[in-house]
Amino acid sequence: MRWLDEGQQWSWRRYLEGTSRFFEALGDAHDEALPVTLGEYHLLVQLSEAPGRSLRMSALAEFLALSRSRLTHTVDRMEQRGLVVRTPVPGDRRGVSCVMTDVGYAALVEAAPGHVSAVRRLLVDALEPEEMAVLGRAMAKVAARAKGLDPATVLATEPGGGSAPVSEPASEPAPDPTPGRAAAAGA
Image (cartoon, rainbow, N blue to C red; front, top):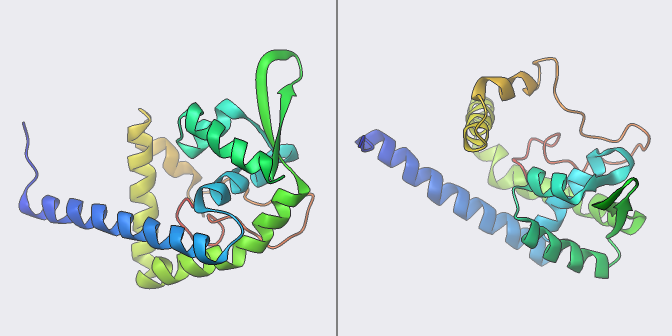
């Protein structure tokens, strides 16, 4: 067993406290002033980036790192509010897609400024630009390792690396509600 040394232990504990407090404060910002919760916002961002604002439920669960059961409960709540609808996947009797409605898109666009403002206040403005870049690279490696992937492969999508994912639907000019484009972290 390789125990953490003093420096690693310090960093690990700062990471735990920092992420816990960050997500608590960001969630509070959503709950207090925005039309969607943080989890709903993250889901709507994923749909906004997908062709036709639609993703299979299984792919959405993977993107959001949620169990299918938890995703189903979230989508149930959002569907009741008219933010999304579920539709069958053509040619696949078992497949179901989650599709963002116009009401959902409007809620995302409405929430985006408050979300980005909170992310800036809590994270981006607290770090130097170099620290933000290191944080992004470090968390990409952690996410890849947790998914059983080679961390080096995910760094190819780093901004400036030539293959960064597109965050805004090309067919609809609108305020960019995506946290990635707003220098936020996975919200």
